[in-house]
Length: 246
Image (cartoon, rainbow, N blue to C red):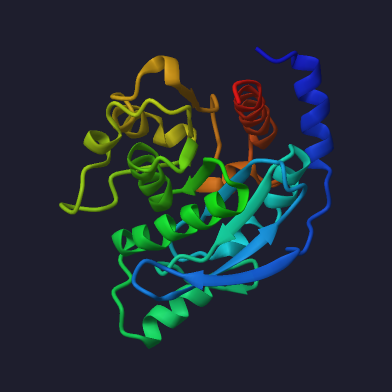
C-alpha cells in the first residue's frame, strides 16, 4: 500500500495542474478502414501508454483535463474518438462524423473495432502492453478487450454496465479476467456494477465506490465532482502498483 502522505501530496499536485492542449492530433485506420482521430498527450518515450476511451455522445475532448494529470503520473496518453459519440469540451468527434458520412453503423458495439485498432496503435508505439481506460459503454468494452487482447496489460473502467442488449453480456465476458483491474462508479451505481464485475478474481480487482456522490463515467475525476480527490487517490495507488510490478 502506498504511503497515504505521498498519495495526498501527489493528488494535490495533479489536481492543481492546469488543463493543456493536446500535443498533437493523429489519424489512423480502424479495423474496417474508417479513419480514427486521436489526441496524443506525451511525456517520455519510455513511459507506459494509457489509451483513453469516452462515453456515449462524447469525444476525445472528455479527457482534455484528465490526460495532463495522467501525464504527471508518468503516463503517455492517447485520447480516442470512437464512432459512437458526438462532442465534448468543444471537441467534435471526428471519427463519428466520418462514420456517419460513410453510412456505417454507430452503435456502442461498433466502436469495439476502433478500440482494438487504437490499442494496437499504442502498443506499436510503446513496444509493450498498454493500460486501457474506458468510460461508461467503453468501460464495458475495455473489460472485454483486456481479457481478449495480449496488447493490454491492465484496465481501468469507470461505470461499466450492460449496455449492449443481446449483443454480448459484460458480466459473462469479464468473468475470469486476470489482468490488474480498477473499477469505480458513482455511489448510486454500486449494486449493478458490483454484480457485473463479480466474476473477476478479487486479488486482481480494485473496486472503489465513494460513500456518497461520485459521477457516471470518467466525470468522477473532474474538479466539480463530489469525491473526485478520493477517486484520484485510489487511481494513483493503482497506477503506482502497476509501475512497481512492471
